[in-house]
Image 1 (tube, rainbow, N blue to C red):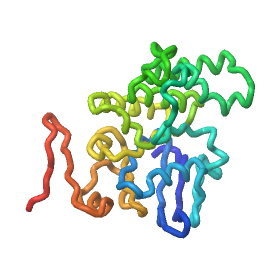
Image 2 (image 1 turned 60 degrees about the horizontal axis):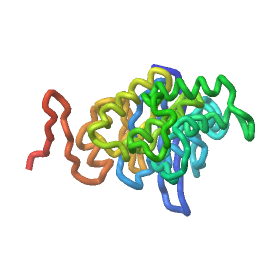
Image 3 (image 1 turned 180 degrees about the vertical axis):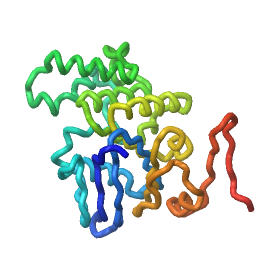
Image 4 (image 1 turned 90 degrees about the vertical axis):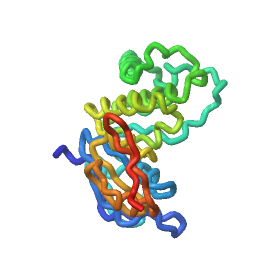
Length: 251
């Protein structure tokens, strides 16, 4: 077992009196690759915001690196679900990634040689160094996501949170994208929110099934009954092997 870096104990969250999360308890350890799955509105994004300190629990306690989440935010990288920007705005890949150093550099201070070296390293990690001078809006969805991950990496996080990062990545490049995340976990913990149950289960070390309550946390080998309890409906699974095939319930 690795060192515990995030701990949630009996966490509940309400928005305007409506329960979003109820009695959630689990921990994330260093170098974990955790996939969080569940239906829309099940509280997955809220859970990431709890770790970031952007949402506060109505009950329970959460610590990140042994401190309140807001005090540990500089040690967290975050790639949100939607990165909205003007595709015609003439900003380069290089400038977008350097923006990730803002928290370290401070307001109106120039980027130093160390900042630029970290930006180069982050772009090389995600395979986008050769595209550093391209306009951000001219990239494909998958390329943009790699740049946003580089922007998160340049702050040298110890845990990387990603909210539906493959939503804008075409199917042909999703395997390559998941492999990139799997390689990153040698340097940090990676927490990935996704709807792609079958693909996520191939790459992650642990899965959390979340739908307001926590139905499972641990092995990616999940019983169909747990998935059906999480999604509140029958779930079809894809078995990955030499020939991927659908596993259907008997009728």
